[in-house]
Length: 265
Image 1 (spheres, helix red, strand yellow):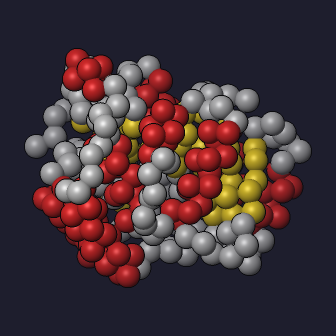
Image 2: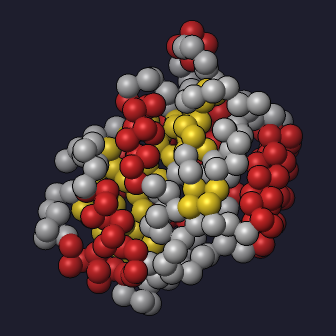
Image 3: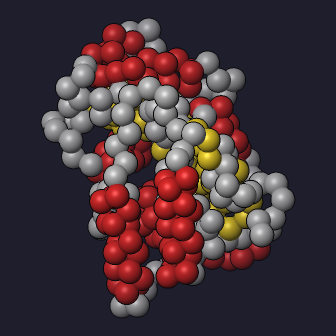
């Protein structure tokens, strides 16, 4: 067992499952992997099961019945990780849109630089997206700008789904009721971490659209996020967020949000 667990939710990722698992295990920094499969009809879970003996004690599979949503998959994985004592828990897509090699940089931000949440950011240094059509790029970019405008949360890639959490963040956030299970889930998790006073850092990455399998993204997902942000902001007016380790956060260089590399414009 390592101190870092990579959570990879899957639904119809048969073409990518073995490739992404082997890539993570080839990295110089050791990580464990938990695949959370939502009953993929294409046999994704079968592919993972065949690999379990080869990576015994490092690769794990949780199978759920039906497509229950990205947010619930991650929440399941968070609780699984905390119950087993992992110190750092990662979110990563199965389709190689997130480069597994960047796991090391996210881990370094939390494990060695003292941050509580490291975010793989497409927009902290310009727009670093490959193979997306322009309308998709604009939708994603302005969605993050909209989140910043409404919430005043100083994160340039508010919808990012490639992250490393220190376990203390998840232990705190999971005491709340996380409202959203779709695209807005990614925004809500950052929002709660920010409101509780955890130290956040955006690490620049290059996001590359999938080359195998079908995308699960839709305009309905963005619609959920649009209205979800307003709900989050309004609900925050009627509650208090006890600051977690506020003194340490205030004294840490660059708290609450920083970037690796040049300062974002």
